[in-house]
Length: 209
Length: 72
Image (cartoon, rainbow over all chains, first blue to last red; front, side):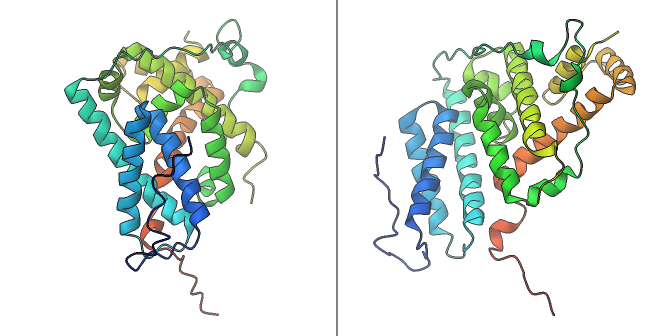
């Protein structure tokens, strides 16, 4: 687990430009990246290599990051591209093992809709006020991450492949060897849950400051 | 008439594939009468927007310090 192969050049205080005094932050960041990459690639070694490449690539070019959130943004953007490459390559060589994506017991759909398939009164989506302002708020992103983590792993994985890495449906189905209808069902459930989670934990009481 | 469960499924699928004309028509009629699903539909677009901004940031990645040069 705590394989600390890379504690990037911080200690060597190598070539200039790396003023990351906060090594603890880097370690934490690497942990987050690893978690994300492992979920997406479902191959811990490959994930580790990918994260390492991304992190090193990012740090090499970032002497100017003073805000940690900016660094995180940058590093994840790089990681995202690397993961997309790896997934596409996998597809091409079709060396993907049969990963069956099943539905991790998800029957709270019945709590959301009534027997006739209409919204239960207290589940009906409300109107979100000033949703785009949330983007600027750090606290919103914490809620967003928590909601993502709350999803069943397979749903989170598919959702992030689709929405974050932005593979299209066909690429995802091919890469994971799943059917289109399977994909649609899983994405649907992920979106239902995520939406509800954001509503309950962020939008319900209006935008917080 | 189409129920909300079906409508939300279609709305979700619409994010990933092109819906048939029939589906789109039925959906449109449902949305005209259902505020819950209308909100849901907007929320799906927002989810996409949020997720894409998640690590993109806007342009913050290249301008580390927000320009706090308010001339007093």
